[in-house]
Length: 243
Image 1: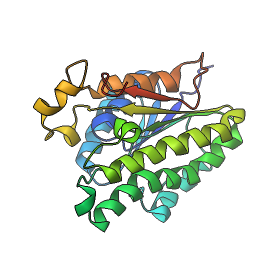
Image 2 (image 1 turned 135 degrees about the horizontal axis):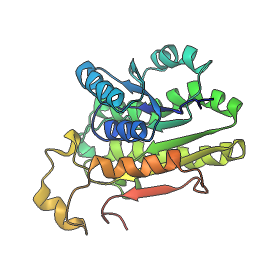
Image 3 (image 1 turned 90 degrees about the vertical axis):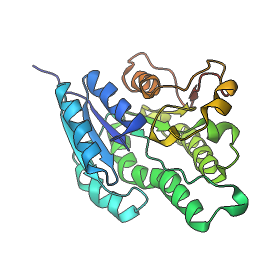
Image 4 (image 1 turned 180 degrees about the vertical axis):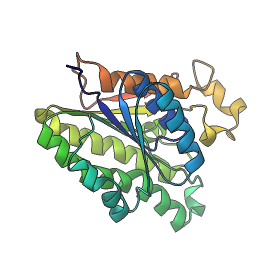
């Protein structure tokens, strides 16, 4: 009898690190549920690439900062189908010095990066507990570990995710649900395209920005490794930027 393929839900999976994670998990034989906000073209392209790897891909377009929209998009499906792994990768940045930061810049980042985590877990955690299995990987940031000038809002949200994931790990470990955090440094994506490399590279011992695939490989390991005793941990992928 053929075995049923495992299912991965990637929150924020249409571009950048999220796309690399989705493709890596698909290459490992998982079917993919992929959520995104509004870039339909990028989502369709990622779906096409996933299907070329031989995996099914289902797209969900909604704003994770919206509690009701999240429940409507995923609630009914979660009642019947539970993902084997859940990767929370969604996030936005609105960088500014704190003294000039607007309420909109603060609220947008916190509501997406941190409230969004609650909204997703509110829908999916109980079904995972019911099944007594699963892997949860939260994508944080080096900024959430050490702080970064001009990113008080972003650093706060990413540090909050680390605290939330560690607390959740204590709650659900006995139910055979593994929770870990992957914390990327400066990764070559659209979000980092405008950063001043000449000022940042001297701070990175490896002397280069990371690649999305290098983050995805760690997430893939945490989601697929059968011999697993890693739980409640923060794994940095930063080239030595934070040691």
